[in-house]
Picture (cartoon, rainbow, N blue to C red):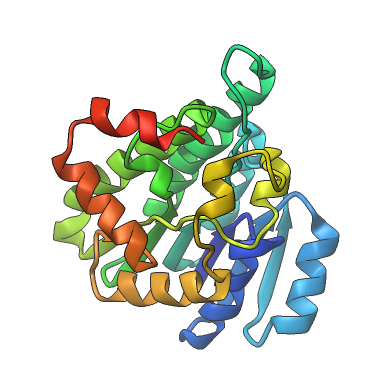
Length: 251
């Protein structure tokens, strides 16, 4: 049974990935998020391919174990793993709640790593892992310090894992979008006027990011950065000293 697994599928980019992946030859799609009502709503509205709704918090170890048991008990071949779940919190480390900082690390780093490890045992050649990274991974962003650090981990993890899986012909792509019209900014506390940088940066449609990401993964790309401005930013981050860029990347 060929399947796709999408985390953080209840809204925003995760929902767009769910709609985009309907174009692939799959037997079933697993959609994972905490909000069961949203998952059911999306499956009923957009589910052309049979969809399994898995409402759970992936930061809980018992839920990762439950997913592992589900995959182990069935004849599954995971063609696509889309690690989309994640969140950010705006503000300095000193002034932000320590529990929120830790929660970002739990979801953006630990849960992504554990799910990938579990799912890899059920992937064969010509399969794809798409890890949702961010332009924040290129240079540390003050006031998004922990978030940008978690995304730097996702970038390193994706590149290293990609090298490990080359012989198995499983491609890993880190996608690095800029701001999008999703719930991210609201959850992060970045309202209009809070951050001059976010007020001026161009936004990208989540549907275009999802479409471009799947296309890039199937082409074997290591990194996909939507929007020409952010491609230039990524190039600059490779050649210019971090000490020069960090002051300009304060959110």
